[in-house]
Amino acid sequence: MISLLLLLLAGEKRNNMEMLSGLLELFKPQQTEGLISGKSFSPDPFINKVIEAESSGNPKAVSPVGAKGLMQIMDATAEQPGFGIKPLEDPFDPVENVRFGTEYLYALMDRYNDDTTSALAAYNWGVGNVDKWLKKGGDFNELPKETQNYIKKITE
Image (cartoon, rainbow, N blue to C red; front, side):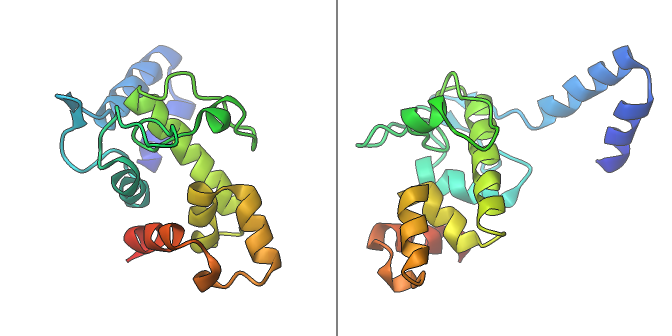
């Protein structure tokens, strides 16, 4: 994978764009009857676990609180994600939703110094809530039960 990326940087522009386009096709989910076929939505297994926990692989999923798509993105987050992330235009486009959700989750990992528990809690419960929780000591048992179960589902 790294050698392909180096070729993209060093080689001919036209040929490299064709190669990059082909490489991206390898990671493009295949849609079948509203569900993504197979279990791989991303080359990152961690992201696949988040998708399974969030939407069970349904790119048209809408939660009771309005989160949308594979990675269950809220409208307010999609419009103003912060962290230098490009806003999400179509939450039901699987490729775009996974791009956005992945960038957002990685930004949370950076924010919380690679603390998976805090990053997943923030993804699920919100950054402001997690910041307050951490100021109070960050006891896992003080998280809402739903968030505790969400984190366990992904990390275990």
